[in-house]
Length: 138
Image (cartoon, rainbow, N blue to C red; front, top):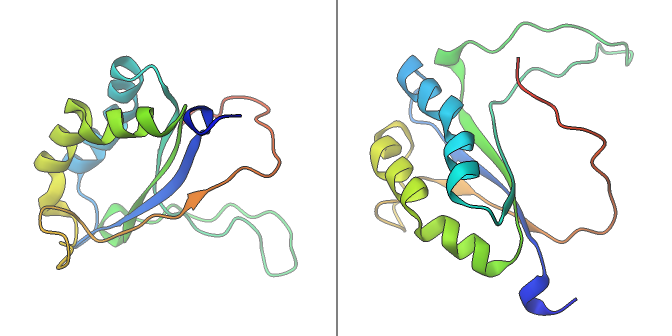
């Protein structure tokens, strides 16, 4: 596989200033559809909120209550791009730029990168894995 064919995979956690409100939740719920429509080389784009651990202390399944929006600390993006060019198209595209400019006030500002939120973004190299099916949000 050439460098131009190497997928770009990442998980990016954006730190919220003070919980999540309904307006930002609505934006996040529509974001993946906008990325999907505008960026054909974005292979996976999923927006998540942290949730409680789904097992009890002895490893048995549990059904913990959802974390209230006001107590949310971060938004987590799980992304896969066809290659580095597709990732650059995403970060330089209108969907991302509009999202960033319209929601930046919800996130902790990064003192080292003006105009950016505090993020933790590991990039990953696939060693092994599969995708069994699509998991849709409720």
